[in-house]
Length: 216
Ligand code: HEM
Ligand code: HEM
Image (cartoon, rainbow, N blue to C red; front, side, top):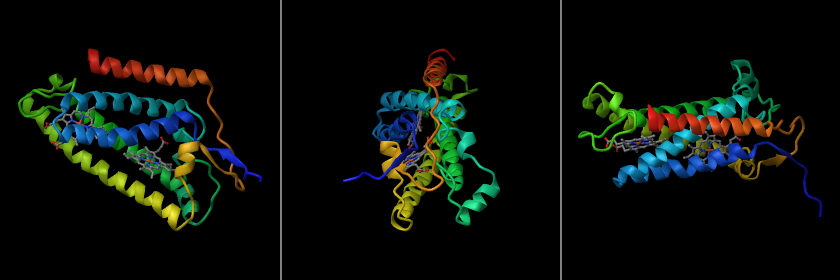
């Protein structure tokens, strides 16, 4: 039996990041809804580190992880909509939805850092920089609204993936697990980033997250 040739499309950091946030978002929601605020904030701070890492990896990472690799102008999006399939990694339309999802996640984390409940008992590590408790509590209301924006985007994201699977017969989930996709015409493998860039991105993300949480 011969196995079909495949190409590498997602590096390990992108895949680990993805499946970690898939676990973290429901865990954050569950912890907040059941009043486990210490746990909620700990998980939120881990999410802060992950988002910082993904933003840095979007600048320094391998070719399919980079924003410059998947955030394309309107012409590329139109060509994609007309049927052109010369891309590896996120398609030109999906690239924008990925960017939007990362921005909404970052905003959600940012609001959480400054948010406080109404009596100031459970408050993000930066809430004391807010002018008063009332404004920190207002941010908590925005944090709640933003959660529903995020939940809507996630629902659309999963529907889009199902659409690709059922209508276009394109399995996107297996590559997000294994990192590999069937080789196809014009489908080149990703260009990996050297290890030092991974270490730099992880180190910087962790350092920035620690400073924000512990020292600001
Ligand atoms: C909490 C829920 C989820 C969030 C916040 C989320 C977020 C994201 C983000 C940010 C990306 C871009 C990855 C990157 O370049 O860093 C992505 C891609 C992807 N996600 Fe999710 N995701 C969620 C749930 C899921 C689920 C449940 C599935 C599987 C059914 C899934 C399958 C995928 C796939 C296949 C891609 C790659 C799409 C492509 O080929 O362009 N995601 N997701
Ligand atoms: C993607 C990351 C996050 C998600 C999905 C998320 C989600 C939520 C949800 C669903 C609630 C309950 C809202 C309500 O029903 O009132 C909540 C509350 C809260 N979150 Fe987050 N959160 C995130 C990150 C953070 C971070 C990083 C912090 C701070 C370190 C934080 C601090 C808080 C606080 C203080 C509340 C309580 C507000 C109140 O009781 O009025 N969250 N969060």
